[in-house]
Image (cartoon, one colour):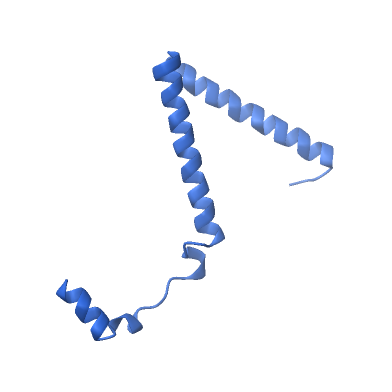
Length: 87
């Protein structure tokens, strides 16, 4: 506590370089990282639901997510082709 009070009162905080805009909490990079973390938590929740409540074995849950990944890639590829865009 004393060190923190001295840090403020002696204005030592002025000598610290600010965080780059890339790593700021509202930057695109950090917002993307937050979205990926939320997606991973949702996938974990779905995996738990499938294995604990539905009774699907763990390998079956992995298969469901693998197929969902393949089909979502297929759909995105078809939409991209239909729009005539080359990502």
